[in-house]
Length: 257
Image (tube, rainbow, N blue to C red; front, top):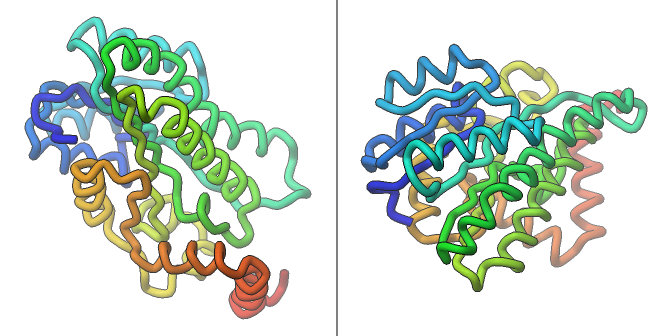
């Protein structure tokens, strides 16, 4: 996809990877660049910086997704690229309260489903449209000490796969962005995540550059960290060996588990 003269929406665009994508996309001269975030002030700050449009949106709400998509379509014309980027992470396990699982599921998975629900009819009628899902390497592999994050990111990847299989021959393109560690609050606010970093964290701007390249190539998997592909292949080739390796990593980094 060439972003020039396109109508683009980025959720979670007020910070981190979303803000970096907004800044990078702006260099491609889209017709309309919509920065959406639960934090309206952050969305407005980034939108003002890039000459975009700010919208406050709670992506966990189906109605909020519908309103965002319909308003932008009415005001700027058909949406070409929707970046389902909003998400969050917590440290948790099977002992966590069910409300934590529910909230994570709503934000990290159902927000993608809700967006697709209101995007696909118009895209199928036009014969084109592009859905970019910010997943995480956790969706291909796993994330130690973060059960909810790992499970929901696997589900987000699965939904992206399903969209591609179901509608790929009818003009809808799908990409799944799966970075490992990125220098955003999602990483720096969690000491346990930082313990796994090992100096591999990328700047959000580096990730955004890779996204533009991946969109241009229309690749399903966009992998800012090349090692993720190596780990993913190892997992597929020797699942038991991969699981044993992850247990060893966990014992080395988190001996208290």
